[in-house]
Image 1 (cartoon, rainbow, N blue to C red):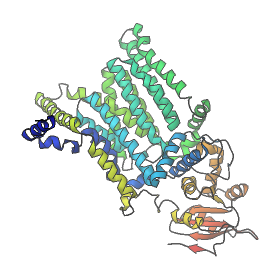
Image 2 (image 1 turned 90 degrees about the vertical axis):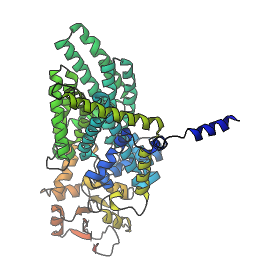
Image 3 (image 1 turned 45 degrees about the horizontal axis):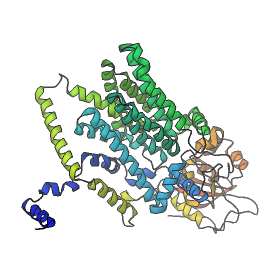
Image 4 (image 1 turned 30 degrees about the vertical axis):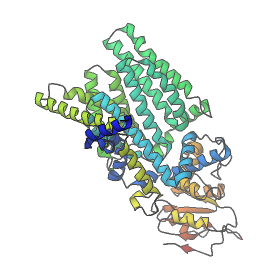
Length: 541
């Protein structure tokens, strides 16, 4: 009998158990961790459109397309008429390229798919670190769910989603170095910093995390250990931080990128006027998740201080403060806090507070979950997660999907119909259009290069003085008309219920030529001039 015959006979006499045959289809807890952001997105938010509630996505896509077309990163602005030709640092150029490629393949659905992939990867890294620190998969999954839910406040299809992922990876590497005394793992961080510095300007967060470990390790030796070991424990982190700082210079702008970021974050004007830099609104629906995580983080910090682990305490307390200071820091705080909370929860559950029966039950449950996890991992190929993402991608690109799965800018939030009206008009003279920066990115996405904007979400590029001028117009400051005249504005696209729109309706030098339920388009009345052949005022649905 041939070898193949023996193999077939063996297969018939010893059939594979049904649970092993279907193991590849059973999701592991890592798969569930990857799917958590998708589940949270549809459970806690308005669906896929939640990721497209900020118009900056639009100019990021167009920037990537310009880079792919020209073969180089832009050096000057080409999106606005107010600052055209001025030096511009596209500090997220690599993310812009990825977004442009995703848009080329799948439109806005492709961009949303990339954002969900980043969120899923962040969730998996946070979950695995929570498992390593807590030793309990169920607790790790619950903490990961809490962290992801708290982070939804800043879930937008923009390059900043890279920073929480990279912060989670850095925390995983740094914690493994501290616990396993394997400093060789730090060598991966400079390479990751190079990638991070070209994807998003938040790369300094990684350097700050390394420095926190250096300070924490040194302080532990200074206060509770031997001063002779202070330099020994701290130097590996200090060298790694220096290497990462040097690695961050590997970007198209060199040290100018660092100066630009420092100037931007050092300007108090932005923190006072941009909502994502301000503190969280505790009346929002995501606040409860953040509050729970914050309470756990502070409790864990106290636990670590009592246990003389200053590094964990410093990380938890510093990022708790930063999260309270700015909502934009909450996703980073969430992934940084999970490991420290996990360690404290493990030790708390193993303490004398709990009965022996409870602790044994918890261990039995964990052993059962571990056996299931090992069975699925030995046979599985993570088909559940891959299949779910594939189905989601199909739904996003299928024309018959329900609204919750539509990857599109919300018509009730953005001037979708007004932009369509403008794109169909025969322009007699160039439009110099004023609109709010919240709509600028969307207008770049829909109408550039035939139309250039007054300004957009690149507030770091425009600068406080110019941004303040635009805001004075928006707030109908007494000199609003002079500001528009200074920049030769001949059209304005405004929300129908805005104060500026109400004022313009009462003036003879501005005429409404289009209006729908969201936006109204005004044209400047000038003798012998008009901006387009539109036949007179038009009122949409």
